Image (tube, rainbow, N blue to C red; front, top):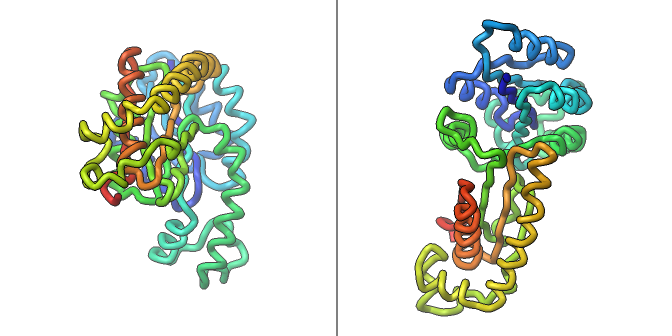
Length: 291
């Protein structure tokens, strides 16, 4: 069985960088592959004696990616493990990247639009809308807005490297603060701002949800216990259904006001629940440092 990873996403969000990183990890990478050749390349990898058991296909422009939507359903029925990675980024970060490189956006066919931020922002928004159906088909979305090239590589190593988890469904849990904005690359978002905020306790304010006093303050609340019980019950139902639909990744975001206390404690508790079921969740506290 060939492990097939299809990389899609917004222009400037890091597709080429991801392709280089996957190649470093030993994947056989075909960059900027025309959609019409995808099935042929995968079929070649099925031939006896072919050593390319990990095949990474990087699909380039918008029209090629759009053509992939119908084909993906056929690929997933082919007997291979087919996963789709979509690289996303905020419009602001993409505007800065294009400004730094002075490159023309692929959709800027008429030229001259990159001379102002409003012009390139409109082009990026157009591409974002065109690729929405592609993003909807993705197994995993990575937001590269605040990632350095080294952080992106570390994330890819964690997900696709030789020691990456082999669980049928890989779980990602992220805590965040609503005042810093919603994370872009998550499947489920839960708001725990209904819990009393430890920030208003001067003894707890400088601590985080990783510290015992804050953890106890949050988790000892009956509302927290009720919320977690209902969330875990819901996940008991959802997880087998996601696996049955062939989903490879599930990302769960837990948000509070600043991303320092309540969301961190709840995220850690949820991670323990997954671990008790022999699953290995990846836990990220996005806003813990800047809070």
